[in-house]
Every structure is written in C-alpha cells, then in structure tokens.
Length: 384
Ligand SMILES: *Cc1c(COP(=O)(O)O)cnc(C)c1O
Image 1: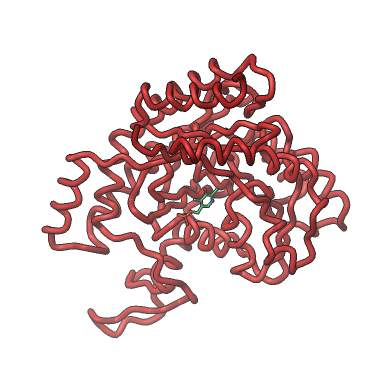
Image 2: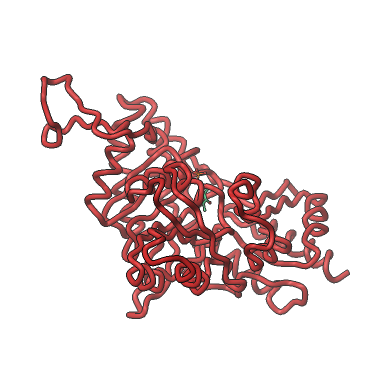
C-alpha cells in the first residue's frame, strides 16, 4: 500500500495539455485565460462576479480591504479555521474577535456570535467571517438576519466548500459562495482544496461596486480605463488610484483551474461517496464522534472524526503510512494571537474539539481499496 495522505490533488492528461497550451500561447499572465476562468468559476458557484487572485489569503486580504476594514474595524470569526481567515483583518489594522464553535457542527455558533455582539456597545462590530469548515455550509440566511439586525457585513470563507450548499427557509439550495446572503466570499485553489491551481484563489460577489474595487486592488490600484481616470496623457498612460497589490493569478494557473473545474462535480460526488462509506463504517461505533453524521450539501473537503485517544491514533496510523491531519489548532491559541491577549480557556468548545479531532484521508482519487485499508486499520486500533 502506498502512503495515504489526508488530501491530495488529481492531475490528468487534459490538465497537463491545458497548461502546456497556455505556456505556448502569447500570454503567461494578464491574458484571456483569467477572464475565462473567472466566468466559469462564477457560474459554477452561482455568483455574478469572480475575481481570480494569487491565493486564498490574498483573496481574504483584498476582500477585507474592499469591505473597508481599517484600524477602527472589529470583526468576528471562528477559532476553528486556518489562521488566514483572521489574519486578513490584522493586515488591514483591524481587530479580530472570536466566538466559540457549535460542538456538533464545528461551525461558528451563531448564538455565541450574538452574545459577543451584545456584550459590546452598539455599533462596535462591523463584520463577520463565517467559515464553511470542512466543507459544511454555514446557514448564511440565519447569519444575514443577525448581520442586518446589527448592521454588519458578511465575508464567507468558502475555501472548503465549492459545490457545497445549505437549504434555505424557502427550500432553495444556496450554494456556498453564491453571495446571496453575504457581501462576498473567498476560495482557495491550493492543491489540497477541491480545485487546484498550484497556488490560487478567488473572491465571488454579486456587488458591482465591490467587484470593481477588487479589480483595482488586485493590480496595484492601477487602472488604464479612460472612463475611470482623472487625466489621460496618451496610450501609455495609467493611474494608480489606490494603494493596491500585485495579487494576480497567471494564465497557466487559470488554464489549470479551468481544466480542473470540468471535473469539479465528479470530484465532489466521489468525496461524498467516501464520506458516506466512512460514516457507515463508524457511525454506530463507540468512541467515535463525527461532524454530526453524513450531511446533505456538505462538500467534504475534510472528513473529521473526534476520538478520545487521538494522539495515539494519529501515531498508530502514521506507522501504517496513513497520514491524517489535525484541523485546526485553535487560531486564538497561536502565539501571535495569544500576544494580542487571547488565552487558553477563552473558547472551551473549540479547545475540547482540538483535543480530539482528526481528519481522515478524503480526496477524489482515493481508491475503494485504500479507503477500506484505512477503515480496517482504524477498526484494528479500536476493537482488537
Ligand atoms: C486554505 C485556506 C485559506 C487560505 O488559502 P491559501 O490559498 O492557502 O492562501 C483560507 N481559509 C481557509 C479556511 C483555508 O482552508
């Protein structure tokens, strides 16, 4: 048996052909593949606009900028996420607040968010960054109601959930990142995520104003659009109107993303099959707790279990060449965030979850044989 990681990209001959063709074209960057990819991705997600950027962290940074985050901004997110979900607020000088997770879904607990909001003066908070952790869709309809009540924006971190959805109160399936209930959403195209570009990311939104701002911020704050410029000195002329960055994706990365997007539904289907099989294998067993069973609309970036002797299990699996992972070390316990005043004991549900969580291998090219091997080894550990 080959080593089995917790997640892995799949690259086909078509992917290689798509990248090679773009390498032989006139544009390595700032060419036509970017817009093509953006259009296809927006269409896949069900949002009006998508802006491709160099990675998911850049997507968070630019989205935070476009939402106006500055030194006076206070934003709430979950401690069970990748650090970048919180860091983007710090990049803009804003303050990060965490609210605890729901111990059954592992998602930001909306009641804890409201308690936090009410514990501060009126108008203290400006935004919320909910995360579709592991691929499980946050109920953004509920968060929208809360956000409207307190005049907050919502930036959905949907890195784990392209193709995931929740069902709203009108019985409509609301796709993660479709920005129906959020100002904007962000995605990552890192190889462990659903769609791989090597490095890459995107912001989706339905708001034209945010879209235009993001286009500017992605390339240094520079525009060459005569309609937007204050002056025009000739063909060479451009204006830097804001302090932006170079957060562009290249055309060959976009070509890879486009090619991967063709197989996104197939990959999602396979992830759900794998999750179902794990669920059937462990559901009724003592000592296991999962993200509340098999969940409809879950995009299964991760398949997380909770076990009491997690550290032993992690090492046992490693010896058998099964490389599981822990998602995540609570962000508020990272030394950087502790230096800002957060400490152990602040978010008991997140901390208890961290003691027991483990992400099992799940990716489209995981074979049935490999998955059965993982299940057998886990059974050996627990029941023999
Ligand atoms: C991967 C990830 C990011 C950051 O994406 P990069 O492309 O690695 O910068 C942000 N948030 C979450 C939840 C992620 O999983």
